[in-house]
Amino acid sequence: MGRLVVALGFSLTLVCTACGAPPEPEAVVADGRPVAFINVNVVPMDGEHVLEGQTVLIRGGYIKAVGPVGGLLVPAIYTAGPLMDGSPPSWDGSTVIETREEAHRAVAEQKDAGYDFIKVYGRLSAEAYDALVTAAAEHGMPVAGHVPIAVGLNGVLAAKQASIEHLGGYVAATLAADSPLLRSGSSSGGPSGIAARVAKRILDGEISFSDVYDEAKIAAVVAATREAGVWNVPTLVVFQYISVEEAADLLGRPEMRYVDPGTIASWVPSEDVSSETTRYLRVWNEAKRQRVKTLHDAGARLLLGSDTPNPFVAPGFSIHQELQNLVDSGLTPYESIKAGTHDAAEFLDALDLFGTISPGKRADLILVNGNPLDDVANVARRSGVMVRGRWLTEDELRSRLEELADSYGAPKAQFASMSILSFAIEQQMGVISSRPIQ
Image 1 (cartoon, rainbow, N blue to C red):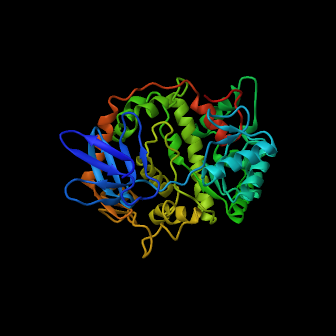
Image 2 (image 1 turned 135 degrees about the vertical axis):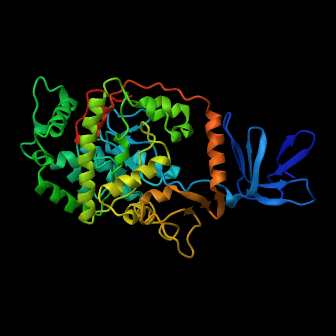
Image 3 (image 1 turned 120 degrees about the horizontal axis):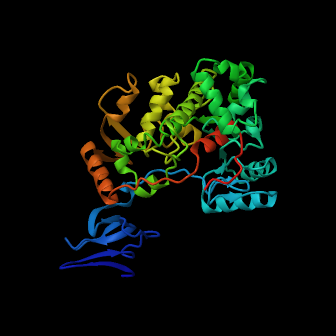
């Protein structure tokens, strides 16, 4: 009969890997987590028969589900491998690229590993970025991610990078010649201090965004973005919730129960992120919101994204917040939803698989109570979700969420000491901080 997986108790149940020989069975196992025997044949012992091509899901010592391998509840994932960054990298685990040889080797390795695109980051040199773009083209892989500071927005647009995250590079590329953001002084406190001082002047009504940015430059880079066919993922939600003073209230939000404690422990509102600093960050988020409208009005393409798991950006829930952010930036509810459905599929060259409700498309659907074209918040008013043709009621979804929350125990509200403001300035304004971000 071949290899057997045997569950023992007062009864005997067989999971057989050779009863009809389905291809490549595998078990997904992790300590304390669910176990899934995927693509196996099952002898259920309720009769003399074999169930072919099944998945057996085990959680908490009990069989939770048995079904055909194709009802398997998994997301469709399109992903990059480790970040491609310069030295020192912004994040641990990144692949440091400094030479053309390293670029070609790293791209080939990610291609062979099955990744879908190359993600570039902010500290790449211009030479390394160019080598990555060339190597990715040779391997038929799109390049997406941040705008390397050494390359700048115009260089990224010229390279026709598939997408830009967080509207990176747009601040540096559109500053007025006499912008207060370009002024420095011994008492400025560095880039973060300059940004805070300028934000305060804006809040106090001393200056406006028109004193900071050059409208002609804005029009030029927006037109160049549209012409290059480069998409933008604004992620406005990222800097909506950054404040030590608000941390307790934010951790008390209902959705935080479903975020694992390890992620919560990694969130980074440091001691210097006061309520005043938070106000300054929101000034620059408003500038990003204006840029979203400008890009949209000019016909440049936008995608829905939240950049979870940044501080207090809960997976799933943050997408609903970002839908509203796009509407608040000038998109209609339809356009906001389209950025995460039809347009996401178009960007991935997968419109034949998903993105619209039409014959032949994958049956991934959501049923809501209320017209989302009237109010985008109605997207969150679910009756249920269909995943690859399997229907999940709202009660079942809530039950699964509660199981998830119960499995975590009490969250740990401990934070690293990195200055999120410094990182925000580095990413949004094109300034490299003096030390790697841990």
